[in-house]
Image 1 (spheres, rainbow, N blue to C red):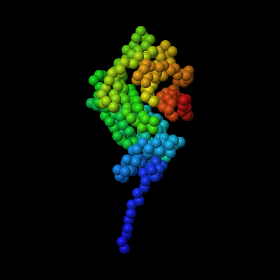
Image 2 (cartoon, helix red, strand yellow):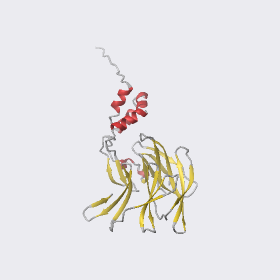
Image 3 (cartoon, rainbow, N blue to C red):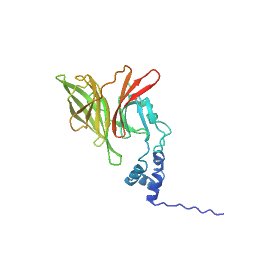
Image 4 (tube, rainbow, N blue to C red):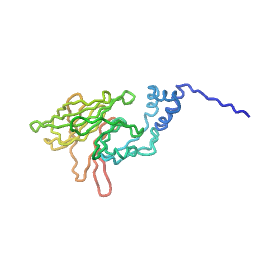
Length: 272
């Protein structure tokens, strides 16, 4: 008996409605089905539809240390459908975490003959090697620019080359900034109204946040800089009197979060 087979061609709008309800992990696989599906999944209409349908869903996230160790993580969400935590997707050879922004991660390789850094998406396993600078410097952060749908348009990596103090009151930071648009490094001097003794950075909406110490106030402060204008200093709340205390600077829900981890005998307390 002869068997008849036929292929049903769905209109692009209906196809987009069906696929947009799936998790990202499944959607990425469907790009290889055909050119039509790939074009649909990469369209602006599909991105906006996906965002609107998953607006109330919790994303996967990980809070990791500089050495790549995951401190807290959540990956059991329907939006991504990841079988493992985000930190587990970081290559072992690049497990020195420096910064992250809008889904991209900045990692370093610390070997005797290789101190290169990479920017990429750990879930998609796509990495871009950043060319070295001409001056001795250290990587301190990553900034991304996104469109209104949250799609990353470009990124910048910035390194600290030198730090000069002025009258023990203020300081100037010599920065090297790499742009993914141009593929070259540029230099910039950033003036800060306080003395910076150590740096821990976080980025949000194109702004770099430095966690540092104000020696005049004898306390830690938050310094923000958008890579165009001068620094803005924001003092933290009154420090908590606690001997076993570790602090973390991170982002959540479009805000910068300062977390203090207080060690207890039988439990750990987080102050946010």
